[in-house]
Amino acid sequence: MPDPLLEVRAIDAYYGDFQALFGVSLRVNAGEVVAVIGANGAGKSTLLKSIAGLMRPKAGDIIFDGEPIGAAPAFAVVKRGIALVPEGRRLFPSLTVEENLLIGGQSRRPGPWTLDRVYDLFPVLAERRHLPAPALSGGQQQMCSIGRALMSNPRLLLCDEISLGLAPIIVRDIYARLPAIVAEGLALIVVEQDIAQALKAARQVYCLQEGGIALQGPARELTREKISAAYFGV
Amino acid sequence: MQWLNVILQGVLIGGLYAMFAAGLSLIFGVMRLVNIAHGDLIVLAAYVALLVTQALGVDPLTSLLLVVPIMAIIGYALQRGLLNYTLGDDLLPPFLVTFGLSIIIQNGLLELFTADSRKLQAGAIEIQTFEVMQGVWIGVLPLIQFAVAVAVIAGLQVLFYKTALGRAFRATSDDQAVAQLMGLDTRHVFAMAMALSLAVIAIAGVFLAVRTNFDPAIGPARLIFGFEAVIIGGLGNMWGTLVGGVILGVSQAIGAQINPGWQLLAGHLAFLAILALRPQGLFPKVSG
Image (cartoon, rainbow over all chains, first blue to last red; front, top):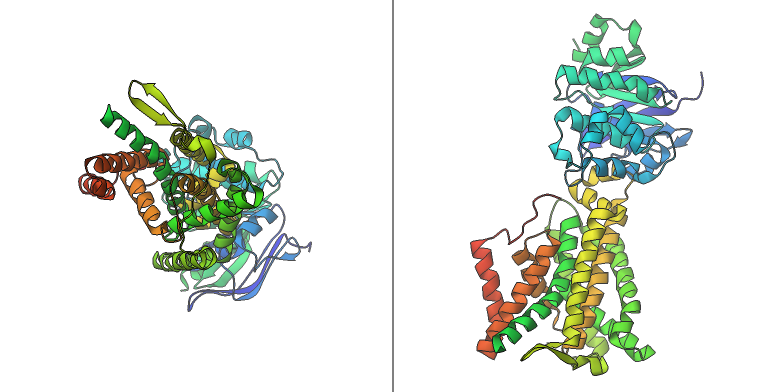
């Protein structure tokens, strides 16, 4: 097996005294799409935040490209090539659409993604580039948030619940762009509650339950029954 | 004619108040920090300028070339070394720490420079005036001071809305966690904001020290003028801050003209009137 791009080794994460992750491990190879599924509160977002450097795991290691990043702050992690599309989009409301994208490129990593390439991927953003970010519809905001993350030219993109609160047709539209993004050679972790969407997009699936990995395997080998057992713990 | 003169002088001093206010507004906008030591830092800048002019024998306006970078470095260090540790969900810790800082600066200056009044000497330019129309006179120095204030406000406006640093300020102000995800070290961004604030303070301090006598105890009153100008203009609006400064300056001038004892009172009354009638200020920030 080749060395993975990202290896999460048995991390524990806490919010104060509350333990949110119990010995979670995960591997992502370069160019691979991995889905993390699980019910509300299973620890999916916590896992992404730990990888992105917004939280520091209390135990375990996070190895990216052969180097430990578990203790690195978020602004240093993004410079190494990990970008997070946060849950709820979290655009900067005081900034225009274009400024949101430009600030995503603040880390100045070289790579294929530029303002023009993001506008090619999401043409509607080009039309609305000078509007304040809150003037966009939910789906457009999600596109802007994905574009903002791409602007840092990541080698690993983390997407937290990109379907949340969006109409199914919009979700399909956004997921239809993922192959074009992965074609640039970056690896992707998608966190989703929408299991069908996640299974379609991913090769490898991890299912979290109450802060631990309840099930993992290639997407095509996981049956509905296995997943619902792991998802709900029944 | 006399009243026109009075109002004009008030407008010009308003530029100085706007410079007191701009740095205060900037810091609150970027990091929700109420800097109680702001006025004392203005006085500190005046003493730094005093040392520079004495040591190098340059005039006060030239001393700005040194005083501005010195104050900016102090600002950066102050934020990185102290104030960043006070920031959090609670507004109280930075409030208390800057209050303590205010006392430390006042007493430090008192130890070093005694309580004697000082003044920066700008030479002949201090008393130069010209007559704009029959009976209406403008001082060269107040005019320069006002022009510098307008330039400072315009510069801050451009920096905030047209540069990468300004974008970083606004993004960090919106959402610190996500700003970090963009590769911004928010500790550095905050320190840059404080450096900028103290650079503006340096300019304000030098003009203050050329205009009037200063001693270690006059900081808190400058802080109040700054606060009043910010509130009158509307929080988060730089041009509003300039208008706020001008309104304060004109009110004080009119008050002083009626009765010399009413100068400060008139300014405070104008502030209270606006706070009562329009608590959000004249030009509150709409968005951005």
